Length: 293
Figure 1 (spheres, rainbow, N blue to C red):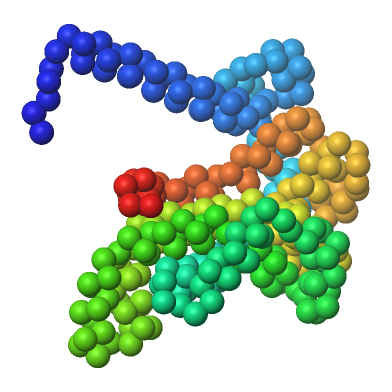
Figure 2 (cartoon, rainbow, N blue to C red):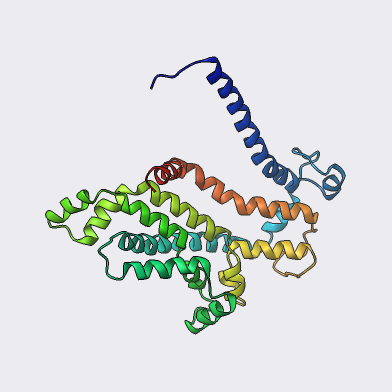
């Protein structure tokens, strides 16, 4: 591609660069403030209001939240929920989306109507709880996965993406004797790597951040509480709403604002550590969806 390097294009590049830098600053500044606040004292937080570097950094907030006996187990549980939940959701979403992408599927329009209907109307919390209880999933690991195992938006976008794959590729495989399952596993999925990585990230972030299913469906089994629910209880405890004996009573409680900031940092870092490894696929998946979806 030959670039038209004119004065107008240079001016545009300068303003575009400045605009992107401002967007990056606006995006990163709140997170840096939260990180700095997790190391600061209560007096400094109220005195300075806003700062990016604490005067006297301290690890008291992190020592306090790590003194909980529930935290290491909750971290492993959240990793299990995110991993198993993402795999389950992608299995259901990809197979359902591939089926709906075929116009010759019997009852396709009826199923699409039912799927789109759920985007506008839902049963609500009480009916969902009754269904979960009727299935015997209360205080069960799968209660954090199955009720929200599929996202209708992800399903529809992925269906449109599968429809954009040339039918001739699948037809040639079927002529060679490949079954529908073989075509799906060996042709469709490898062709859709970027899209699958993108939606897997969406599902993983959703499972990692959720705490309401555990709060509603797992009221008493603390052994399988996820990280977000434990961190929520830590924040509520520092606000004086609840009391939790799972923390070291000999450890002096640090400033409540520092604890809340440390909780935010601790709950966000795992996703930030995973994202760079799939950023390439994520960006490609977004572009493919913009071009073909």
